[in-house]
Image (tube, rainbow, N blue to C red; front, side):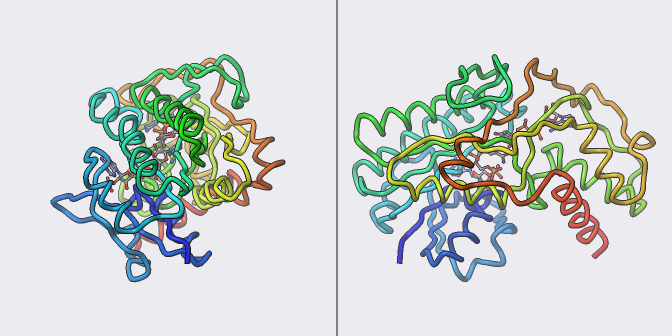
Length: 319
Ligand code: NAP
Ligand code: F7E
């Protein structure tokens, strides 16, 4: 039985990846950090099938102990501070987990399980103010916030450890992926939850930032499959993973309100507090190599994703 170690198992992607790996017969070990209120809500339904290991990306010794105890065959490094806006307020903490945390994990892997395969959760935010659309592996990295800067460090240190130490270490540059398990402070879940509240009479408006901002959105359940595929190849290679299609926040709103038979224009209010300027070149993936070489393609499209999220929020709020 192969052992998979997931950092960030309590997060959106960690929960979907754990489900996926359990389905493939892995022994799944999830690293969690200590918090005063324990919230395993995303993994409650699989808690009896996974093993929880306490550790923190800021704490080298805890990582070393986990590697030593579980001797993982595959390591998925999904942990870290992942909120772009918050990274301005907590720039150093973001760098500690999202940048240096990667080196701490890689050092454990190099010293304890050098034959293990390593996946690094990189992001389209590394392209930031992009030179071109769609982006591909050759597009210049030009991050525009502390989160993106920290992720560039994680991406480059993964490549450097691969070259210097001969590790099977890969970086997946993933575009926005969403689900009913997405945190409420990301725009998609804020919209689906807001729509459900309005439909049920629990709110009468939805305050959003830039409606013209564009993103390449997909379903998290599809994207964790790409992570696994990247660790199954003969050679370690980085990939860009996304749908290849950009949509505006406005389109997302229109479809989400359509699901409940309402017109978004009657409820969405522009609020400067949430405004971020849109990028010149939209962040949109060129998933061609991933499709051709990994055989990966998303199964859930834009409209289906939105409907899934709105219906899940309606059901949760109505219960
Ligand atoms: P998420 O829901 O924010 O989950 C982040 C996870 O990291 C949580 O389990 C969190 O634990 C854990 N974590 C935070 N700081 C930690 C620390 N110091 N030590 C150990 N664990 C820590 O993020 P996600 O959406 O699942 O994304 C997974 C990864 O992919 C992240 O690295 C993110 O930056 C990256 N990514 C995400 C997207 C996307 O669209 N979702 C796109 C590209 C890349 P707690 O539960 O204790 O907070
Ligand atoms: O913003 C616009 C906002 O916060 C998406 C993380 O998973 O994906 C995520 O980062 C867009 C931006 O995600 C609101 O200006 C408009 O253009 O949902 P978001 P993000 O910043 O793209 C990347 C790939 C990651 O790697 C990150 O970890 O939506 N927007 N109005 C708004 N955004 C928010 N949050 N709230 C609004 O009211």
